[in-house]
Amino acid sequence: MNINELNELKGKALKDLTVSEGYRVVVGAASCGIAAGAKTVLATLQKEADAKGLKNINIVPAGCIGMCVYEPIVEVFAPGQDKVTYINVDAEKAAKIVAEHLAKGNQVPEYMIKDGAVRNLNEIQFYQKQKRVVLKNCGYINPEDINDYIALDGYQALAKVLTTMTSEETVELMKASGLRGRGGAGFPTGMKWSFAAKNVADQKYIICNADEGDPGAFMDRSVLEGDPHAVLEAMAIGGYAIGATKGFLYVRAEYPVAVHRLKIAIKQAKELGLMGKNILGSGFDFDVDIRLGAGAFVCGEETALIASIEGKRGMSRNKPPFPANKGLWGKPTVINNVETLANIPQIYLHGAEWFKSFGTEKSAGTKVFALGGKINNTGLVEIPMGITLREVIYDIGEGCPNGKAFKAVQTGGPSGGCITTADLDTPIDFDNLVAVGSMMGSGGMIVVDEDNCMVDIARFFLDFTVDESCGKCTPCREGTRRMLEILDKITLGKGTPKDLETLDELAANIRLTSLCALGQTAPNPVLSTMKHFKDEYEAHVFDKKCPAGVCQALLSIVITDDCKGCTKCVKVCPVDAITGKVKEKHVIDDSKCIKCGACIDACSFKAIIKK
Image (tube, rainbow, N blue to C red; front, side, top):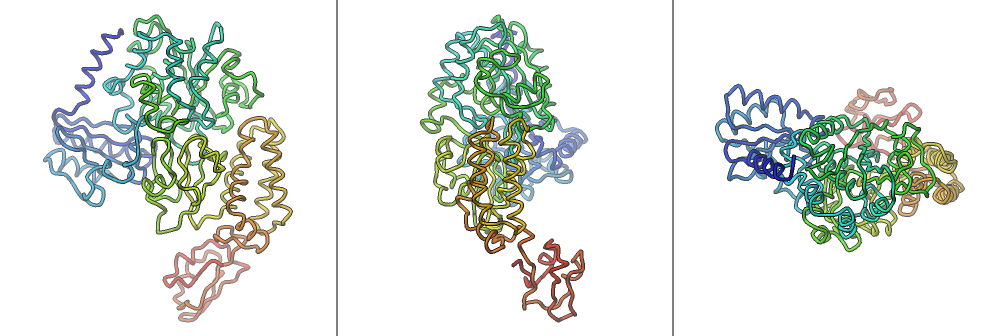
């Protein structure tokens, strides 16, 4: 395929993608949608449309549309009309959507947001402050059809680079854009490329790091499932820039949908001559292979990732040498994560100044976050850098459910820290989050409310780190385990004032002496929660109480004088710890009680409380 043929294909694909008559029906079929039943919805829509002999109905499986709470989501596009969004669709609803909307043109308001008061997702608050660059195509195109991608300027950036720019110019434009790595460290992408480009070698490599392992993070997975060709195109551009002819996609095996769609995308790109030998007649060769990771969090660290691709145990090594000088099989290697790569085609299409026109001076562009935890609007969020945490939590996320008070937000996963109400007006960028004691990380954003215990939150993240430590260096292997033992001791009500001092000492040593960033940042959740919620630690240690009522060893469940003796609590207690006569106050035997909370849920009079 040459440039002219690519442009001809784009025109035809755009005509097919544009709804000139009939309907285009898009179903969110990323992992979240599939888990909620999207495959059944897709099958029902197609079956019912075929049974009714409906023509000009294009039913499309797409990637993540963004609003997890509404999955499965079905969006209907018709010429000259705003799209219509149906939420929480099942087989029965899908059949009625076909029978009424697609067959008769009658929309079904009761399946929309607020019974039709909101006709499509674009109208809701969740999307108002977002700016989609990375997620531009996700939730709209069919990720298993390269024509959909080509219709929306797919591979035009690669064509532009190969036909109008030298490798040096390609690197310089990336440097000018100010794009920083979205994998966590925020290192300038153009600078990384320039280091590798300067090295002379018989072979160089581009690696896409898709070993997304932070608890609660699903940004990279969603991009790969919704727009795989954007990543492939970016890898080819990066290969041209540094002189690499080979790329590897390192994807965790727990992402089967992403892997499946990547395989299809690579096959389609090769068939059209957009991957492989002499791409677009330019003389440039570039090929990509997939390597599956076994789920080790440490393999998100670039030297451990390289070791894994080489067939070795995934363990970090000392730097320097850095991968750009000596990486995969000792050759110059550039490693970029999925989100970083997904920005790249847009930068080369629209220019460096365009990309810098949103974001902040030192953090250009947008950032994708997986917004989860105790938040009303969970989902995938892409915001311009510089927006405040308050805007994300309250304007996009619409606060905590059930009227609960916001307590903190954990950014950066197990390597980050918690940010409290005092810093909610902090503009989100790489440097500002570090300044308030956290970090950007890959983009996990977990909200906790008044019912969460911050000691338990710190213990959760540290437990994850201990489990994921590769074990190569003593500070991380042994130090984090000792910290976890202390936190376990504190949550069991056996902590001492000396334990708090020891946590500080261990944290300082681990941060200074661990081999890689996993170990160096492992103490962050503990240090952050100790700084902002010292009173909770002290309550656990000195008063032997968990203020949030989470740590079971430190709480009692009691029946108050409001008890009416209805016996509901007796019936649900799994260990027969509650006794009492009908219409008389009941009592709980604390020696038998396992603090499961079943009695609290069962009580109609709110007479049972944690204390």
